Image (cartoon, rainbow, N blue to C red; front, side):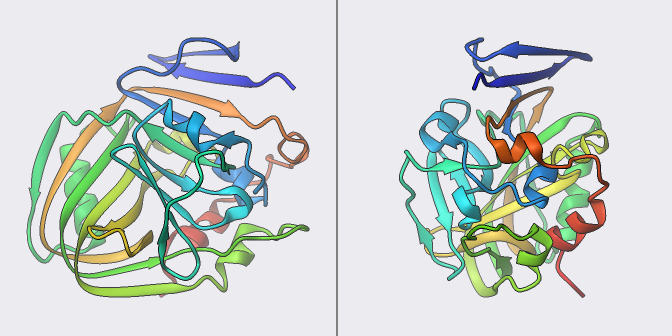
Length: 260
């Protein structure tokens, strides 16, 4: 099946056949949509090797929803449901991911004591312009980091909200590491996670996952503003047939945020 690309840049939209020039600087490349993932479209459609051609920095998941992805400095890390970090096969595939060629334009020291909400507020001030995308890398030492991951799924695939209801959660204290993530604007609801979405990898590459919370001891954040979105839509029967007309924001909130 012929792949389809969706390119958004500078206020215009186009659909083109695969084979066009790859993304350039200030581009967020994305495969599939967050609503498709919420609806249980977990079959990989793009190899990690191909995904890395579009960026050296990003987040996502793996075939069959087998853990959380951290792409940092061109290296993939797979945080599985046991909380441990693995090196995935580059021929393995992803059903959903977002990556960029990270080239930060500014950096900011992160004050001690800030929690996740405080860091998001700080970054919103630094990454001015809520209608642009922003990539964030934050290296630091953390008093506490709380993450989660998800186990690999088998057909018939459950909805992501049902997987997340029993997801394992991990807490690690006094840990150095790196936060990798993106801020997406409000108008991409259903396409990606609107607002901030962070994953974490420890400095020794032994611990990580989707970030639920943290507290900073020391930190330095780097910000890369992105003004171009390129999407590759999966060429799978599941994606072609899934119902993406529903509003799944309540489901997304339950998946992305920690239950209080």
